[in-house]
Image (tube, rainbow, N blue to C red):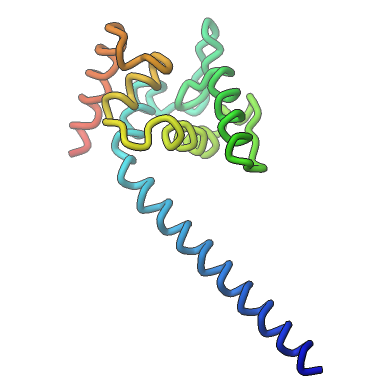
Length: 150
């Protein structure tokens, strides 16, 4: 009987610890997310003028961040690599919330210590976008939008 009581107490403590860890991770994520909010808002403005229904037929780019299927595939590879059970579908690109989640997954995997410029230029031009001349104009647009928020 004492052993059962002790096991119940341990299980209860484990649950409480897990809850505290989850709350801390949520707080850390929100703090982290807010530090990049200006960049993200600027990219959304440049990509879609904040239009969640934006669609570029020629590139099959969808939603507020103009996500293409190749990006969804990259996010899937990242999540599989991290052994996450989370998955996104092509239709998730229409959701602002899910598009933003995908952006952060991509950014955290590829750009943990990158500058805003490199993040924006790679978002626009792919893995070597920061080296491409054509992404300089995109970065200038993003910078203008970021400066409007200051």
